[in-house]
Length: 270
Image (cartoon, helix red, strand yellow):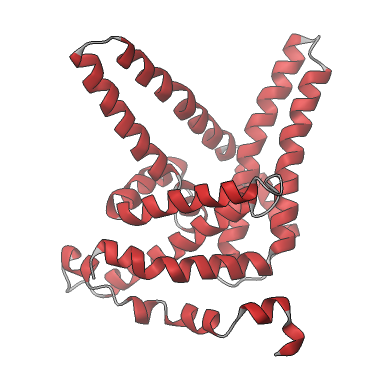
């Protein structure tokens, strides 16, 4: 099975599983999104309140932004467990915040650097108005897209596979280059979820719903790599095209196929 056929094969199950898992954890997703908003807007409100005290307001602003990284990493850890059918735990979520007091801020700083440095670099090179500037600017645009597609795997990689921050960044790029089709699909899917979330003011599915879907997709990919490790006699190039997704995802199919929309909205009728 080719990579692009694999993406087509997986996405239906992926969307359904993310929907059902999100429905089961709807209260957690809602509270998590509210918590994110509370940290963000609460911090910015304090910045405005102490705007007359420059140093204090800057300190609060920096602390707020860095705190968002801690919350996102802890949230991804909990959602990764939910994708594996583990019962959710608010206590576990809040206790895991302490684990990410270093790596959470590093994650946010990486995002800030990406959002700030790359657009400025692209604009500067294009503003040169020369062939060299245009070529470098286009290259920077492509690198920006690659970085964006790779970065969406960072939190799932960090939660499910690699605890070391820099190794998780490296593996995020490896995941993208090995699965560009699925990476592009996940970017479009995440943007679609973000647009849908604008109606209820990013409360549902919101950021937590997007992180849930990303963890679902990475969990599927890990099953592929586990199968490849269990079959070392098959070359890597051949194995990528012959992944038996029906067998690998059989348990997930059984769980999801046993559910229906009627069961979600009218469980007493089953």
